[in-house]
Image (cartoon, rainbow, N blue to C red; front, side):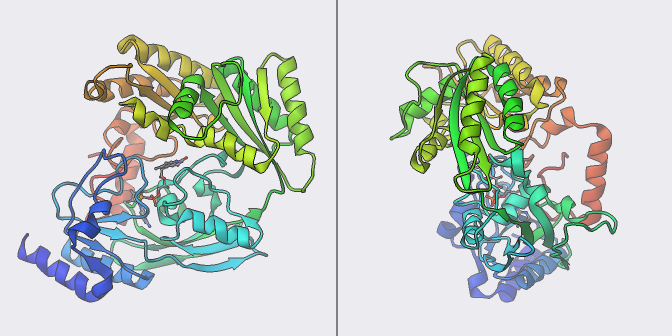
Length: 474
Ligand SMILES: Cc1cc2nc3c(=O)[nH]c(=O)nc-3n(C[C@H](O)[C@H](O)[C@H](O)COP(=O)(O)OP(=O)(O)OC[C@H]3O[C@@H](n4cnc5c(N)ncnc54)[C@H](O)[C@@H]3O)c2cc1C
């Protein structure tokens, strides 16, 4: 380490005090590796500021000394964006100690929270005030609001409530030079020029450090009905979604696709899960309808929808949850679909989106192409079909060598991404770019978009110290 680097670290230690930093390998270890072990890195120090002012002080020192900074929330990201590189000269800046709910206003229907608040804690704070914060993702017990904003997280309620981007009214950000932008407005309407907060949302820590946000709250739904319907095929699932939106007055709060093989994995590996159907069906969808009134019409609406689906030969069988516990059991089948893939060996992950109407074509074309390339590959295509977002995860053939299969990641991904692009889709629907897709986006994004991204990066972070090597292609 050079004398300048050592001097920078000494200044950071003094500014943040003994609780605000560590170089203890055991304490740093979980911040240097991603949960699937796909990415590992090293860092000169872990910074743990406790306030926006401390984040600003730390950034000012990093700017003066040219120290590269990797912002980190709950470290549940799936594209390696929060993990430092192997060089060891970066510092990781954890937002975990900025974890206060600053204010909740039931009349404005807003909650103002610091970046390090865990998503589940924000959901609970909203619920305690008889409100709903609708962002719902599998990692909600660990991921943090700052990470959710920085990745523009999606999840299972996007269909009705929108992505994180649509749930944010205001934002507080520490800029690359250490200045604080207090944009914590609660306005539903504000047409005073560029909507700057949106630039930081989904920027994966490359343009600034999010320290707080004003989030939208909603009335709590009082009548939530959950069903799993076995459908004739994926085309029938898309048609059923359209029917569900019409029949419920657009009260579909989740519509999730589950393939038979994915369900088999869950039933095999996740204790306590039960097959909802006596017979085997290739495709099923989990449907959630939510209404505002307790004891309202949603049950009748769901029953009518399933009946109409059967009459039109879209639905072949259906199970409607009779209690909250049963609804939770049905949700468990969907929620466990990611973790159930691990024990089956290597899995090549994709997070694509296409227009909803093109999903059947995408699944059909991509499945055939991958199986042609690697015969015996088991295709697990599941997820947020209501948003046109499919997690398309080819699983290794039974008995194949895991590493041999994973070594074909790039070839498989190009096939899958080319098909998504040819159908007007995106190669990253909700997980972001990070390290994983940084060079891959060059194949698909128009040159003019890449140029504008690079220009923005240069104007917000001229020294390139904010999360270097992530999101913006080299
Ligand atoms: C089981 C599981 C299920 C998941 N399901 C979904 C899902 O349904 N939908 C979905 O969208 N994602 C999902 N994810 C991915 C992940 O949980 C989300 O991307 C989440 O929003 C990341 O939040 P985090 O706090 O863990 O961020 P981190 O992983 O810590 O960081 C993610 C990125 O944001 C940057 N960052 C973090 N905090 C800040 C900050 N305060 N300011 C600036 N930059 C920051 C980091 O540098 C990094 O680039 C899932 C992950 C897991 C493990």
